[in-house]
Image (cartoon, rainbow, N blue to C red; front, side, top):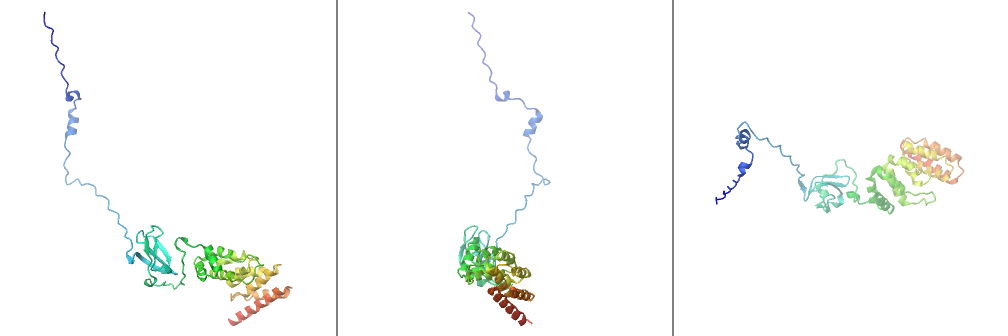
Amino acid sequence: MPEAPTPTPKEEQSPSAASPTLEPQQQSAQTAPLPPLTAAFQPPTPPPAAIPVEKPQTGFGSTTVPVTLSNGDITFYCPNCSCKLIVTERAAGKKIPCRKCGVPVTVPTAASIPPDPAGRQTVNLTFRQDAQASLNDLVKRVREGDAAAAKAILAFGSHAVPIVIEGLENSFAEPKENRAADALTDILVKIGSASVKPLISRLGKSRRAYYALGRIGTEEALQALIRELSSVNWQRVEAACVGLGLTENPNAAYVIAHLENTRKTTQVGEVFAAAGSAMVALQRRFASRM
């Protein structure tokens, strides 16, 4: 029998044979080396680094300068975060936490700081940092006889007027002798003209509003008191007479004529006496200035 033909084995295809053949241009582009750097080619210059901001140099132990003393307050900067801190001079030499980062810092001693060149009055404030005490608390302390709290209120200026006025008496029925209300009246007088309009709104309720307006003595304040002389409430007229008698305005001599007219027309003994006393006080005051 003839032998069966032996099958020929299939040739294995190599990976190179299976992949498509690259064209000459593509092959040369992939295999060509990069050209060497020449003198004409320079890498781009990196941008200049930011100039660091230096913190103030330490000048008072663990605190930093600049340090200033103004109006009784020490102003300095936290050495850790450069946060501006304002504290009372009572805290000089003590350690306090920074209100921003919480790191304890030592307050500079007031003796090491030049005095305020403007010569302003020293006011001890223990409430500046983070508003540790409110105006309401200070008014309460003033009513209890705390003179330091009265000075602290003055540091708020005109912003303190509404709160201070709320601390005055609210009725003519309250006793005339009221030291707490007198202390608040002194504050309003020292603040000055910013207190006038709020005080006018309190006429008819608080005797001290009349007294404060007379002591402030601006034209607006005096005219408000003169209008009160025509009130049908004798207590308001009496308070207006007392207030007008307290003015030290050198141009307020015309007030005497209004008081004289009130004295002549009133039928109330208290008003008659108050108008007469105010006239005498003003006449003596103006006579001493001539």
